[in-house]
Length: 76
Image (cartoon, rainbow, N blue to C red; front, side):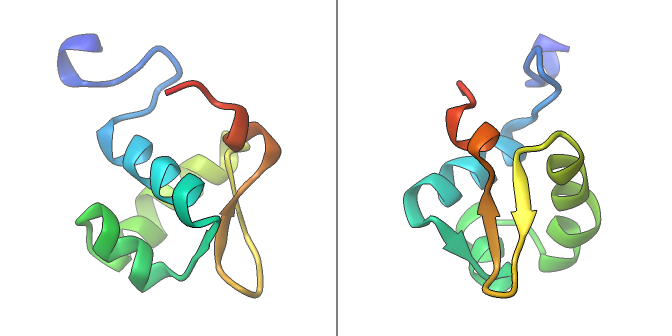
């Protein structure tokens, strides 16, 4: 897994970019987050966001996507 860029907690480099972007900006809309990490909005919405929500790192609010307390404490 390590040779593929996947950490022990199952995060790949795009997952880490999403978390780092949200740490920097606190709350982001899907299109803004997409442009910051270099992924299509559909990919974030259908692939990355559900996984990170399931892991307890992200939450979707009426204002956008943000980190949970667990996501803020995650060591990358």
